[in-house]
Image (cartoon, rainbow, N blue to C red):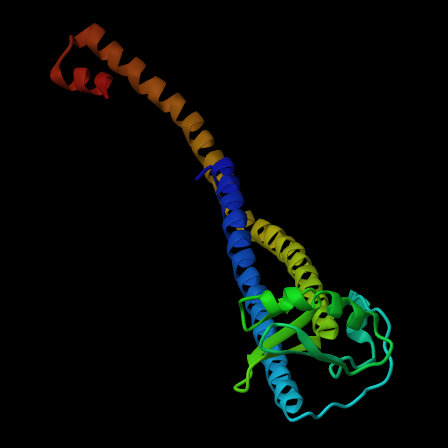
Length: 240
């Protein structure tokens, strides 16, 4: 195999290896992020279920004060616990808001949810996500509806951090893998390139060394034909 063909084969190997590595890493990142999201949603649903049961029994507890809160990636490192921040909206049979509760005082989020109360009631899904909130709608046997709403800011911040970290890890891993594959493949094919060069050099030298005896054989055969005439043996020798 020629050195150029070996280098082309090396390029194909690098492309295939990097594509396979990227596919595996991407699959791992997707599994981690999706798995984390599913586990988080399950925990949130369990919390909403508990909030709903307590609301039906009339159990409400205040958790302090809270202002307007927008989750960011740095909030995943925050010691502030917002898992207990929740809201409850109770509607009568006519769909009129009859009672509301906020687990924190002076909350701008509570004012916002009060404005969106009718829209939340119109949502068809019994469990879902609305902005940075998760909600659960429960129809009461006595008539009316209870909507339990939970602030999911900390979970959102955690998901943002996880996606950022997994994305950065994927990029770094691809760069490191490319460096290893690039230099590793170069070292692996070096013996093949050297063997190819030695083979080419041997063929060139052998071809050069054979020219002189072949020329002598041809000249001697032609001289024999000049003095003794052509026969099947000299003809065969010249043909070969």
